[in-house]
Amino acid sequence: MDFIDIDAPSEFNLQYRHLTGEVSTIEKWDRLTGAVLFVIGVVTALSSVGLKMGSLRHPGSGFLPFSLSIALIVLSAILILTRLGKGKGSKPFWPERTWLRPLLAVLILFSYALAIGRLGFPLTTFLFLLAWMKVIEQLGWFRVIGLSFAVTASLYLIFGKLLEVPLPMGFFSG
Image (cartoon, rainbow, N blue to C red):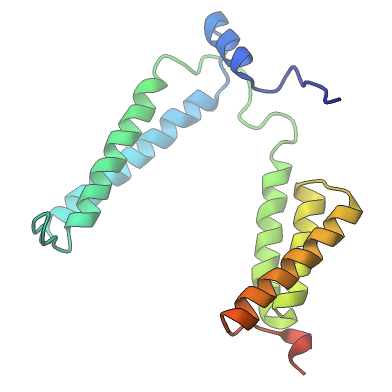
């Protein structure tokens, strides 16, 4: 039987917070993110205007950047407008130690990128999956080792053998 975490953000909790006025500072960060993305969209749109736009049938080099920047402007404006009047609560953006798992995820990914050239694809991928599933996903050892081996072997067979992608082999290159 699964236990329900009453502090987890459910639809009921979100509606309750909205009705009572209890709002976390995430809305403030959403507004800030929307503003930054809006500025990036405006700068990109202004920069792409100097390029050839072309037409829908024959787009120029400025057509795609301009179109994407307009989409970014519209979506960031929606994000900002949906968050107006909110953000008066006192809840922190990263409550307690919830920042630890994203930091560990970045460190594990960075370690994988650094090690793959030296240790090779099979060993590095196995260790990466082992660390990811144990530290980030917090699975049991039996499942972690089995899945890590199966996924590493599958990826090696698909990319290394079937598609003949040159993979760094490290210790296994003998």
